[in-house]
Amino acid sequence: MERGRSDLFSAAADELLRSRAPLAARMRPKSLDDVVGQDHLLGAGRPLRRLVESDRLTSTILWGPPGTGKTTLALVIALSTQRAFEQLSAVTAGVKDVREVIERARSRLGEQGRRTILFLDEVHRFNTAQQDALLPSVEDGTITLIGATTENPYFEVNAPLRSRSTLFRLEPLSAQATEVLIHRGLDVEGCSASDEAIEHLVQRAVGDGRQVLTALEVACALAPDGVVGLEHVEAALGTSALRYGRDDHYDVVSAFIKSMRGSDPDAAVHWLARMLEAGEDARFVARRMVIFASEDVGQADPTALLVAVAAATAVDLVGLPEAQLNLAQACIHLARAPKSNRSAVAIWDARSDVRSGVIGEVPMHLRDAHYSGASSLGHGAGYQYPHDAPGGRVEQQYLPDALIGRTYYVPSGHGEEASVNTELNTAPNPSAAFESGDRGTA
View 1: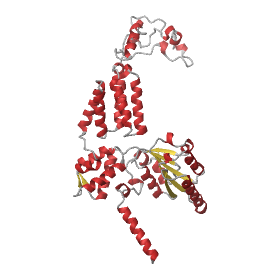
View 2: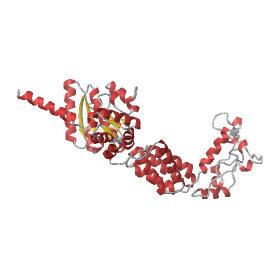
View 3: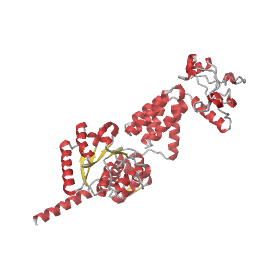
View 4: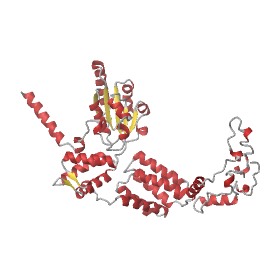
């Protein structure tokens, strides 16, 4: 009787804890179909879905920003597999805990023929010795490791352990996926919400599902009539909504580009901040800066493209909020850089000629002469190798006959292009000598 009463109280306590658990915990998916986002991994026929559904998952590292569903996915796998499932957090576990799991897995395999999955959250928190303790059991199949990390595994996970695992990159939730999550959360809480409230939650979530559900739970608690308004979401987030509709998106991006083009770093940083605060996709901002570096800075400061590409890489590598530093640095560099659009004009003009049919044949001396029989066709005859010439420059025809004398690239007098301009002005266009009909050895 005493035992029955204890079990009854234990079950009641578990039920009470479940009912009072955070919204994100109460909404944990029970199947792959319930998971929101990550369609590139979990969509029909996608690799991770196929491995989970066939229960053939090998050791895996789930890598992605916070709130993208790494732990959720691991728990769904636990419900889908016939294997035993053990869970540890690298924040609190040590080598002793790992060895105990491995010992249980070995006994289970020997006694029942049943294999074990070990889910290790925050795997990057394990030092080299702790990660090495996993290696033999991962290698011989005693355990199948699922490691979760927010850090780049190429930097934070030992090479031997990484080489024995399949890496799956989880992406921040899209705005559409975030909105689906919000509506599911509202159903669980028995609430509704205004369009403005939902839009603000989506913008502020920045792809973090856990963050949006935490804020939504607070907003629902603040809405006495069960209707979540913008003011409840603002209170839950601690930030005011920033008006940023479709028109604002285009206007702010335009102001951002024009401020950098106008060499005003303060204005450029302001518009950058507006975009980030409104929840603009940081990768979109980075792409705009990469384009700007070639279109508006170009050869006036060739390092601008390197800086912009590095910032775009950093966005993928570290994500927000830290990537705001990389974006700001690139933004200021681009704004302060000397400006030239001559590289852009060159390719625009060249492509315009090609589209108009002004092309011509490849001059004989420039044609490929490396295959058998090419010389009998006259290919390469008369070609002068620039590296053998004084100064590494040879005046010979490089453009087709129809374009002799055509100039696409005209350097500006800004930044490093000023020295390029001087150099080109003191040296003749290699094809210019042939404009009058002189073809030399071609």
